[in-house]
Length: 296
Length: 305
Image 1 (cartoon, each protein chain N blue to C red):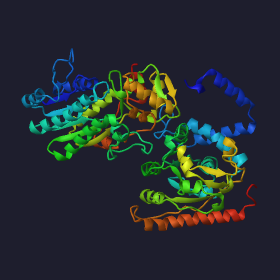
Image 2 (cartoon, rainbow over the protein chains, first blue to last red; image 1 turned 180 degrees about the horizontal axis):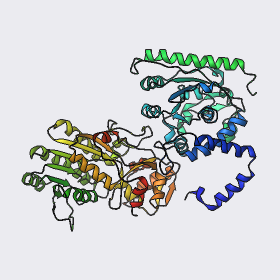
Image 3 (cartoon, rainbow over the protein chains, first blue to last red; image 1 turned 30 degrees about the vertical axis):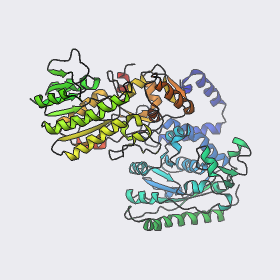
């Protein structure tokens, strides 16, 4: 039985809803209004062919938007340069938990014109996680296979890729803002589908959860690719996964367009990936130089 | 008048197809089970695909076309018999087709042959490897059948052969695996998983098979219906009540129940309740202008518990 359909649940939700501070209801309305402007290909049950569910996106976006506005106080720069059609957002990845992906997606919904649902390309183990797999699918994320990525780009979607993957997100604090080795897959897909690449530098996420060490072997026991030791985790238990209230600044670079044969050798692909890495590194450096502080 | 032989004619899909084809062709069928009250103009021969009498049927009747539906897809029979009927039966049928001048052949495989895995992309095409045996060894015979038939397309270009891989089939009469699952009094699901699933109505599959035959198609084709919904939506829309169990409990429990004959599916089938297995119907759509007539709502409302 679906609890969200019961009368008690609805009554409680309405009561709770009427008590919410005005700003939260404003944000809810804003999310609904911006989502309504995005054309989606949903069927009679509200699902798109890849499992995205608009009502679920709306629900999931509320906590994201609250974090975006009030916790990380995100500022975004240059988002108006993101092409309105198919596009790959390539960003740095850090902070132990993917708040950076959530904030980038929130920026694309709340700040981009027209608003976009950014599609995440997840690790292969995400579908194996109970609940996480469902939330990921309903909010538009897919397993990051080349086929899925090509299908999204050909459908004109905005796709987020973090080519550092686990290497980036679970790196120790001492390596903050040092870009880890980039995977090459995204460049081959960009060439194949002739998709512009927007380099994105996320400043702030790298300080949100200072990693002291990583114990991947222990992670394996829990079916996870990493087991980070941070200032607060695992010492504070589940509370320890909360990030510090750093201030996020997301810098969008100018779109880069690449030509060439997607089946070229790694060395030739690497050369083009290097251009993207360089662009992100420059944005990161400028972003760090210009900011007033880590928390302000 | 053209003559079509249907193996497994007494099954629900066989009956639908026989009725659909009977208007234009002479239909004869082979099945170990009888079809009482079969329509006039359809001949049903009670023969076993593995036996000499089946070969005699082809030798004397000389059908122009064959539709192969005679598989055991459930797990209620002995695995050895199941393997024999499916693999040996198909092998014999393919041999007979080359020997007795069959012009066209349609083998109805299934979309399950790709297997359910976390790394499955959405909407897999026909070139995807058939990996089901890796996690679901109990259907390796059906994977083998598909491979035999697919190889036959190239080995015998003189026979126009098609292999169809339909998604989950639902309707008022079929006893597909998914239909039996959805008919359970409490439908067990894995807690925290809700994969997208595609469905096709039994009439739409019948039409797809008939058109494959009539349009003389050649090749391997996924056959899809009108779309996909999460598993839980399908359970709700077909009037079921789900019973959500955590995976560490689900697997050993149903493995044990299967061993005792109290649960119809082996452990490997459970991955289909966990990971999405969705197929691209593009190749079939481009080869043939047949489109599904039933939308998702109509498919679910036509289903009887």
